[in-house]
Length: 194
Image (cartoon, helix red, strand yellow):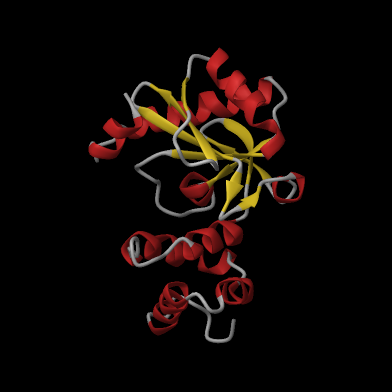
């Protein structure tokens, strides 16, 4: 299945995503490629709703080729989209996005060092904390993509685990993010005094 086919087909197999998560994390661990679970599955590991689109892994920018080789050796099909901040690995119908830049910032040891070892689907793996993931999600909101309904359930589920001060500071001057944070305040999701 190609990237275009995945983007056209909104129905995803949750079991296939979990298998892809387990296989990709196991391959990177086996081959000694530093990584961390990112995106929706990192949030799911902490109590947010399970994502339905893909698995996100973060690797340091200087480890991209090692990560691609590791996943390819494990049977994943690697695709290099025009975007220069990730590559995609496919297993069955499941897609794994391997990010080496997040919101334009190269992934490095500092970010990967914030990951906490958690057990997820029978595997111990490093998982990024929720606040930087939410910051990235808020900073990605724009006139072209501004779907608050996908963010609200995760913010509601993880509200006690988020650093609300950091969320506000990191998104100051970003009107879409500010509007979303105002909404979380009005809905009683955000603490009254972040």
